[in-house]
Length: 70
Image (tube, rainbow, N blue to C red; front, side, top):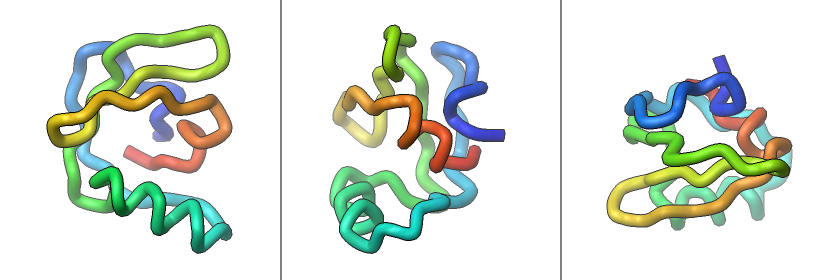
């Protein structure tokens, strides 16, 4: 299941990041978004969602949400 299908307010564990872009992988890693870390969808927006990773909240688009497997 990807982050796009996640329920709001429920905590999930990231299983895998599916991107071919090393720069994007490095960026997500710097945010704390990598396999084994908990992630929560705080709210949904028209073009994406707001997620909580560690102590931060980030707005990510649907394409990136599809790349994050939970």
